[in-house]
Amino acid sequence: MLSLRKLSISYPNQLWLKITEEIQQKSWQRAQLYSNPTSRCQAYLNELCWQTFIPWLEAWLEEDSNESNLIDKKYLANIWEFVNGSVINLGKTKIALIPSETTDLEEFDIPQEWVDIPQWQADYYLAIQVNLDIPDEAWMRVRGYVSYQQLQEKGVYEASDRSYYISQKYLEEDITEILLSPQQVAQTKQELLTQRELSLATADRLLDRLSNPSVYYPRLAIPFSQWAMLVTNSQWRQKLSEKRNRLAQVSLFSSQAVNLRQWLHQVVSTIEEGWQTVETLFTPLEAIPVRGYQHTEETITKEAITPLIYLLQPNNSEKERAQAAGVLGKIGAGHPEVIEALTELLHTAKEEETRWEAALSLGKIAPGHPHGGIKKGKLIDLGLQLEGQKIVLIVAIMPQAQDKVGVWIQLKPANELIKLPPHLKLSILSESKTLLEAESRSDIEGKGKDKCLQLRFTPPARTNFQVQLNLNNASFSEDFVT
Figure (cartoon, rainbow, N blue to C red):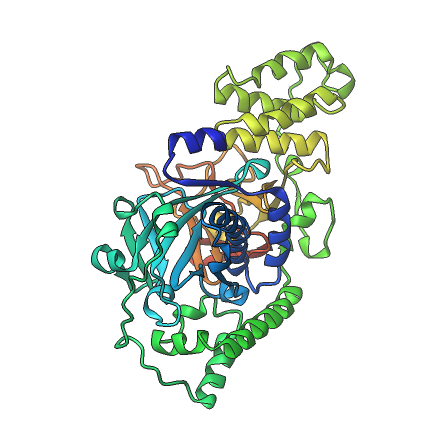
């Protein structure tokens, strides 16, 4: 990965700023006050952006024109419970900051609120990319900006998510042009929103409806005209934010989901009945020892470990590195040099598969290691649908940056000599929406073709999700929280 200095040299017209670890920690703590994982992630990005960009802007204006006092900072954190973005006033000019972690830089999307609500409408919109892959090298960049007029002429409105989209090719890169000579360019479209206010009774009814945590996106749940009047009223917005946070906390503590974070800390929960180590679920039908060799920890010498550690080096193929990491997870206990090598592999691996092997092996030989992963399985019986054959649901987790965990779901036959039945569906759902899905295939004879189904994703911290298995009329589900 290129350093911040090299990136800024490659794109000299764009603004690049380092996000300090202190800002990351404080911003993450503040983000925990929000009602759901999406809002927490949204608030976190906006807080990072705000705490990094505003000090730079103040210092830059003071140095260049001695006019840092022109900044009117509209710091309204409760907006981030509902809408991505924030706005600052530079003199009479409004500038909206719209952050995102996306690596798809083909277009820039802006929530409708910052465009069509007269009180929030901005003159310029800054597209800000935030990269948090490596905490001590985190950065943000302003990859460009677009004026209100240009957005109206070249942008496209998408009703499904109430956002305006504009191609990256229309963005100007050098933001110093608008900072040195800020001008008002927005033209308030009064016909979009009347200036009438909601009645108190209507507002209370909407607040009760939208405060339910199951309404994941309040901004999309009611007509935009009503939403705009509700969200621009600071008292109603604050009341809605507080009610959602309070009800979310109640629902979180009443959840009976398997807490995957407890697995990392070796905490056993009574809710997790039936979950075992994967090794205990897959026992070979017949143990066939190698002649003259007994596999015990005492026989694993440093000389046997060294060639495997060598295979972890970056000059070897990713397949070799992943395989070596897997073997070290079986024989590397008691060897500190293996722990060090696997930890290094987590930082140098080029492919996700290799990182998973390194993390899971690290978790086996050094339980409780901060970078170690863990994997557990559970026998599932779908009755006659599988003709008495059981399958194993395997859940693996791997610690990642900013309190997130990677999740790897697998489905395998309990007997590794057979295959999964065709049309067995594995699904991951959150908030009743299907996030990921896989289905087993059949061969030309109509028999099972796959030995494994698998899905991987990295949800925001403290996300509730459900794993579902379906085959014909039989089904199984289990709830989890990260």
